[in-house]
Structure formats: C-alpha cells, structure tokens
Image (cartoon, rainbow, N blue to C red; front, side, top):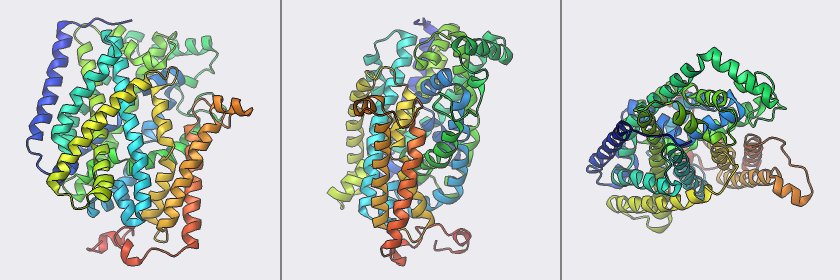
Length: 521
C-alpha cells in the first residue's frame, strides 16, 4: 500500500519546507514584545488574515478526516463547510468581530471577564485550552497516518518530525509568522487537493463514471441508492450527519460558536491592521471556503469508487494519492498536506499559548508582567504545549476504530454550545449578568458530557440501558441540548439577579445602527 517517492518528489517537498521555515524565521527576527508575538503588532492585512483563516480551519485533520468521512458516509460531510462555515463567517464579520477588534483584547475569554466576571473567563479559557491542547495531538497523528502510507515511515518518527518542524518557526515568529506562512500554505493546499480531484476524476472517466461506480458500491453494501452523493440525509439515516443534526447542531450551534468564539480562529482578526481589515478578512475567507468541500470531500467519494474495501475511512485520501499520483506529483501533494497540517498546528500552538500567557499567567500569577516578559512566557508555553501534543498524539494512535474527524468534533461539542450561549447573551443582551453566565456555561458543559456518556455503548451497556442517541457519532445532537440548557440558565438566573452596571457593559454589547452613529462605541 506504500507508494514510492522519486528524487523529484523529495526535492519538491524539501524546497517547500525550506521556504516555509525560512519565512517563519525571518519574520521572527522582528518579534520584540508580547504584543508582537500574540497579535502581530496589529499590522496584518485583510487578504493575509483571510487566507490564514481558511488554512487554519482546513488542516491535516480535514484532508484526512473529511475525506474519510465522505468515504464512510458520503457527501453530506460537505455541509460542515458550506452550511457550517460561510453563514457564520458573514454574520461574524458584521456583528462580532468589529466589537472584539475595537476592544483591543488578546483572547475571547478576556472579553468574557470584561462583560461578565473572572469565573466566566477562567471556565471558558480552561475548556478552550484543553480542547486546543488535545487537538494538537490529533493533528499530529493525522500527519503521521498520511506519511506512513506514502513513505512507509514509522508513525512515531512522523509525529516527532512534524512537531519539530512546526515548532521552530512558531516559537520564533508568533502570530505574524503563523499568518504569513499560512498564506503560502493555503495556496499550496488548494492546489494540491485540486490536483487530487482532477487526477481522481480523470481515472474514473469523469463525474459520470464516479457516480456510476458509487451506485455499484452502494448496491453491494446495501446502502440506499444516492445516499453517498446526497447533501441532505433523512433523520433515520445511519450516517452521523442527518439534516436535523446539520441544521440545529451544526448551522445554529457549532458553526457560529467556532467562527466567533474559537481563539485559534478569531485571534487572526484581532491582529488585523484596522477594523475594516478585520471584517474584510472574514468575507474573503468565506468566499474561499465555498471551494473546500469540492476539493476535500469529493476525493473521498473518488476513493470509495476506487477502493470500496477499505476498513478505515481515514485511509481513503492517502490511498488515493499513493495509488493514482504519478512519480513527481506525490511530492507536490505531500507538500499540500503538510501545508494544511502546519497551518493548523502553528495556529493552535500560538492560540493556546496566548490563552495560557494572558488568561492564566498574567491574569492570576503576574498581573504586572512587562510586554517583553510576556514574549518569554509565550515562547516557553509554546514549547511545553508542543511536548504535550506529541504525547497526546501517541495516545490518539491507540484509539482504533475512531475516525479523526469524529474525535475532533466530539471534543468541540462538549463546550461549543455553552460557549455560544455566553457569546450571544453577552454581545446581544444587555440584561445578561456574570452569575447567570458562569452557572449557565458550567451547566451546559455538564449536560453535554452527560449526554455523551449516555450515548456511549460501553457506559449504557454497564447500566443496562439503550444508548440515548441511535447514531454513530451523536455530537451534533448533544451540542444542541447543551446550548439550550446553557442559554435557559443564563436567561433565568440573569432575570432573577441584579443586572451588570451600565458603565461596566458600555461598548461591550452590540447596538445595531448605533454602532455607526456613536464615535465612542
């Protein structure tokens, strides 16, 4: 199953890696303060931030995981891009991002303390830190799987090599290095995935040939005809992506929570050179996002048509490249894959370090820390998180039978619904207060974890119960219930307790047209 790489393949890959590393280290020479490291000195142009948003979101997890999910369940996974990204990015560009940028905050949890209290800040920061630290390991493992198939290399060696490569320029250049290397990585990633799409369709005789092969596979596997190529699936489907989960769980909860509350995403816009650039970056990113399902999910369908016997969907994309790419082009695609991987790993490293340094160290340990000292703290935390990511990657490797994409989405679903409830009530409802926010958030997280446990076959079997949700990966469902519980608790408790002082929440709540008319807002 391992494909052979020529000297040309290696040369292409090495040139790409050398160029990326050189750019990151060159930018690192200009980093002098914590503000430079965490927010790029607020100097980033809109076009660079927009491409960085796309590159950060589409990492190695997505090339492997989305392709694998499309192989296993069909094109409905493409909704995670079309429905799960574009609408939320447009709304975020005009309502949420401008407020965050004007406040000059470093992190989303920092906003929560200004709007609510330190408890809300600490709770949200803790959840995001746990998620990002674990996700770093997931992304490193995704890279190892791909390189194991292409090179035949030991997965452990792949994890260590990738972590070391990304760590060097992220430590040196902070957010500026992350964003500008992401620009290159975004272009390479799109080009490489587009190449896989074109070669794969050509091998099958075009779109018609692919659809014909998939119909044969569906008939052989006992799957309803057309299910694998349908965007909208019925409620009773065995896929984890029925229309109800997509609409209520993804479009209304997970997607907006991700695009307006994910530190690794929003931090790019916080470093934009102007409020206009912060807005424009989200619009530009949304336009690019429309292309992603075509070049990432469809190759999973091509792999289904070509290799219907695979036991693990996460092997679909690697297998496609290994078997179909001619000598000389495998190096180009591998560069695209590593570009996608590095753009996500560096972003989460920088974002997680920002949360540790600003929401924990500076807030609770050393409030008087200088900007120069915060640069040292940021780089130290980045190194520690990289070591943790390596260790967690080895743990993920032992989770056989669990798709990478499912692990990623389940982790987010534990707290994304409650985090969205905090953001919506905090930014859109003046009556929301700190007590309601803190209790509502913790209550929602508890509900999400509880529903996950009650949907786990091993847990319910021990209790003698049937799983609560009869779908393979029910994260879309319990995220909805967690959101509803959180927002209900926030509303009820806020109405039953005194409101926040008006002078405290001034300029922290969106006021529609007043935002344009009031120069102090």
